[in-house]
Amino acid sequence: MSSLKNQDQSSINSTYSAEAKYKRSWGSYIWDTWDKSPEERRFLTKLDSCLLTYAFLSYLSKYLDQQNITNAYVSGMQEDLHLVGNDLNYITTAWTCGYVIGQIPSNLLITRIRPSLWIPAMEVLWSVLTVLLSTSKNFTHLVVIRFFVGLAESTFYPAMQYVIGSWYKTDELGKRACIFHVASAIGPMFSGFLQTAAYNGLNEVHGLAGWKWLFIIDGIITIPIALLGFLIMPDLPNNTRPSKWLYTEAQLEIANKRMAEINRKPPSKFTKAKILGFFTTWHIYTLVPLYILFNNGGGPASSMIFWLKSFNTPTKTVYTVGQINIYPLGQNVVQVVTTLSWAWFSDAIGMRWPPMILSGTWSMIICILLAVTPLYTHIARRWALYYMTTVPAGMSGLILAWANELTGADSEKRSFVVASCNMWAYVMQAWLPIVLFPQVEQPRVLKGNIATAGINFGMMFFAFLTYLLQRRDAHRQRILEKSQSTPDNGARVEGLPYEGTELLIG
Image 1 (cartoon, rainbow, N blue to C red):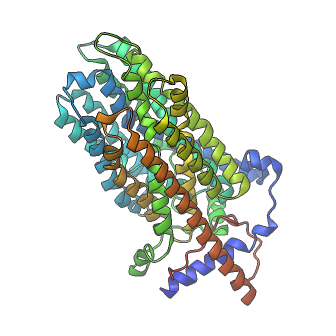
Image 2: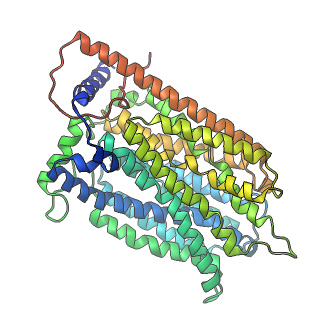
Image 3: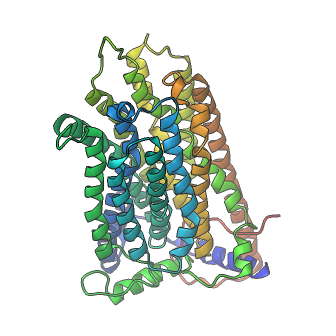
């Protein structure tokens, strides 16, 4: 293990030696490329235009394909396929199981094969499977197809976070990770409007129900985006091929130099020591629980659509199908605004953990208020509370940016930790919503609201623990620097205070 420890110490030396010499301009707090050299700025503009455009559009389409099952359920699929009880929870769990199985193998695989081929190919596959959902005749068909949709989609989110983390420095990464992530909020917004359009405009066209048209339209939208990925998606800085119309050889040299300056290492050979190193450092034991708790701390947001539907009775319609699908989209607007706000705030102050503490505290308060607010007495108040449940939803990008930064000295470990965060979060999501937010208890779900307050407290605990371990390692680095002479190469490095070390446990 001594080689791993030496590698970690080397990472710290390069990380902290030059940060004090770098001073950001005020303009860079608005957009970080404004204080770069013209050559680096042109390169980053091209990288943003290609990588972030494809990542955003693909994630938007993924969320269309991922979330449309709920819209379809409340728009006629439940009645047409005779779904009862917790069937929707089980269908969602089937997707989650497929999503869980594929993440770590896929993320490790893209350290060996070209992401620009693997990721778009899987996107074509899940779009075809989404169209096939429209042919479902019963509950079993939905469960089987949704499982394979989840398996194909498992290749995307952690892989894109790993790839984004392979190109950007610390003062750039938080914003890019969150710009990518806001597609998770915009996707359902499109899904709601698409479902409304499909139900109102295409219902029974060619004999197909409106909810079936939603699956068909979502699949058709996704295929061109996947094909675009084959054209503009980069690989990693070390294996992206130079071209005249994308990245020139000089620009790729800039990219590799940038990553070398912050000790963000390219993939290397798998060894026994490397694999053991995944588990003998503290990162996986704090970042994974942190992400699990974040990912399962937004359950109350799912109740709004059921709350609106609960106003309707067999003899009275208060909210139409279109209104039930559209009104909850205010949650997504709140998520977009707060996700970007957290990202800019985090990059500006140079720390990842404060947004997690603030958003977790907010979420605890909202959950408690939902638990004590009557369902139908204070309708406007409860409506506003549901909208506020998505304030913490943007933490995904910041947590995974943090993981990319903390494990940058080992590319395979970085890939493994990022995938592990997302995978274990969805392992919990495969069963926890059924326990805390069972469909038969919607929309009251008292125990779910109370439990989610506790989950957010746990998320804040692990965020602060991760920060303390970071500061501990930073303190050890300062002691090390006092005891030895370290040459200063003048490189700009990945940010003090949020770049930690990878010291062995104990």
